[in-house]
Image (cartoon, rainbow, N blue to C red):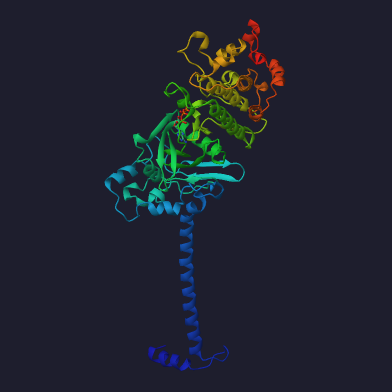
Length: 487
Ligand SMILES: Nc1ncnc2c1ncn2[C@@H]1O[C@H](COP(=O)(O)OP(=O)(O)OP(=O)(O)O)[C@@H](O)[C@H]1O
């Protein structure tokens, strides 16, 4: 058919009526074209909507899930929400200085570390809480990833942190808080890393424990601490506010306790008289006992601290004790004894059965606590080689003193005001029971608190009970008087 023929034919057809409701053909064509246009618009808008929602879900996971957790919104010193934190970070468009670029480069994983994306950490915290963070993703658009240059695309950024209890900190936040981990801000150094004092942008003071860059131990401790402390709230336990995990970096962020640790106050240079009065010392003993009781009896699964010692008792300005360093804690199921393959703890504080068999339960903490009481009362270290032979071991010396009815002789000479004999004996008896060689006979922390708090201490009853306390072999063989029975 020729063009000349078809064109007049089409225009002839248009005005004709069709079978569809008797409409003209041009009306039907118009409707079809209109419908197709509307459909096209609808599809385009659908596509835009789906793109926007997918990108939102990518970026919203951290502010919604990982930051501010309601259950820890207790005091006004809570860290700021992520949104506020980010608003204080340099804008994405800003040109990072060369120094900043160098600092960011620190985030790159070391060569000997796992390849990017290889490690995922999933931590179950009780039945409702789960921490899960892919360690390695590139191209993140939040946190310290905001101001990255093209060369730094391999930098590792934790993207998702489903913390049920705490706060996820970026390395950048902690760098700012500690003035780039300045030596001036070092508070102390423990077996697992250096502790820095830091001030967050909202003026909250924190202690940042920068775990050693050791993928084995440090990360293991990191996980243990995160699990063990993250859900713990008690006024006598140092609170873990959150953590930082970027690349090889593992850091724990604690509340800052501002008056040093008990070891410093007991054995440091405090002059001829100690600010720690008897009353304060008993208060420290009681508070520590309460913190430990909470770990042993208030949590399920219970937590054994495993390293109770004076340097792990931090003090605030009112001399309130806070037990710190749960790095050695292991979660225990109820009624179970955890057998560890390596015995940890600190010389002088470790329970004999733990040292010899590795058998660990909360009674090992009770033993260490007994040593701690003796240390607090006497101002002496658990093992001190600078003393005469019979006084090197604190427990042995103290037992000898008590057996020879010289309880007052164990008191710290730097403590000017002495307690009444009755009060002193009460505390000494508790200490002696805690270090019973037979772990089964040691009291639970709840019982310890009860014994310490009872005003009218049932001295005579305990005197008789004390006689039943098992003597160690050496005492039996030398037929010495049991120190408890003398009390
Ligand atoms: N939250 C905190 N607030 C204030 N100071 C702290 C805090 N945590 C730790 N410190 C200080 O940092 C020091 C080092 O602490 P860390 O727990 O790492 O080691 P440690 O207890 O001394 O030794 P170890 O590793 O053998 O347990 C502590 O002695 C303490 O004085």
